[in-house]
Length: 420
Image 1 (cartoon, rainbow, N blue to C red):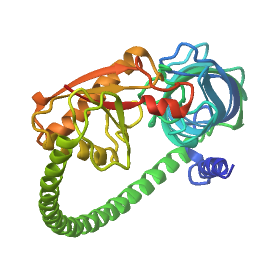
Image 2: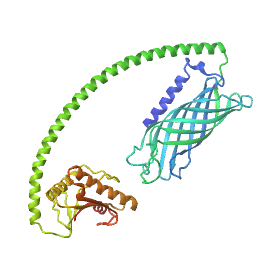
Image 3: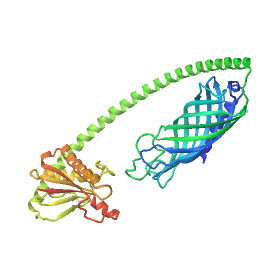
Image 4: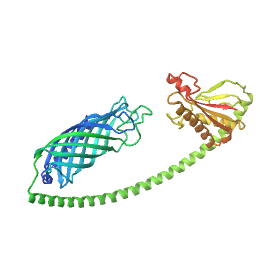
């Protein structure tokens, strides 16, 4: 509610400025008109079920100069579909160009464009939880319409508009594969309205000319002031940026040295540990029995043994949702796999990826193969020969638990090592 008050407070401030004594002389041929309009808006997404949503609008229209009118408007409405719904408050200002008139200057077709800002709030049960449920967004409105003057004080208006937002957070949904699109949000609307003249046109040529000259002088003085202020600010910012860049460069160099030294110390420590671990694993491998069953690698285990014919489930190797990107914790488990491969230089393994049943068969099949390849790539980067590993994706075909529960799905999302 407080954000809505800010929007309409800004609109009132613009209107007060608009009607101040200094700019009143700008209103020319058709005076100032206040109107109300009703219509509908519809979201422009890739889905086929975008619905029309009722929208109301108040507008204030004035003549800027000659064939140009200005329009300040406020609206409340929304856009919706089967999988999304967003309500919006908005304020916009457009310049309307009307070079032609018909029927004794009564009908004025026009084309307009401008800038607007909207405060939107999405339906919380439909929106994507990773996207803000409400917020502000700027947009560009483009309008095509016509105004018909019934008499000196009454006008009718019809128009259609297209609106392009500077963000893609107005329309969102939690439904996967909804074809909602990934670009910036857009919508269109159709409106019909009626307005009345609240201030008549100013036909005094001398006053108009004096007002025009006065405004030009004020604009020139303001332009000079702004130019000088901008030059001073640009100089200040340039000096501040140079100082900050130097500080950042020095800090980056110091951090780089620290990281190199820490990495070298860690490398030496890991090399010592790896050699000792490799020898221990070799000794364990010589004495270990040769089980044939599948063994789950627990998160608390520090090592595991690679034995021909044995399948090991790498418990704790996880990925980001719907991606083949390893999580940071997964590397802890993969280091154990790395040490086992080092300890068994003759071992060759098949890395098999499995998923749960969330998503299509084709998507899960591809995802499981990509995840197996991600594990292989990690080991190759650490120095394990690529020809010692082969990757397979089984998708959701071989579950080991019930996919109806979250716990079961978590068990089904797994990586396996099979020693050939």
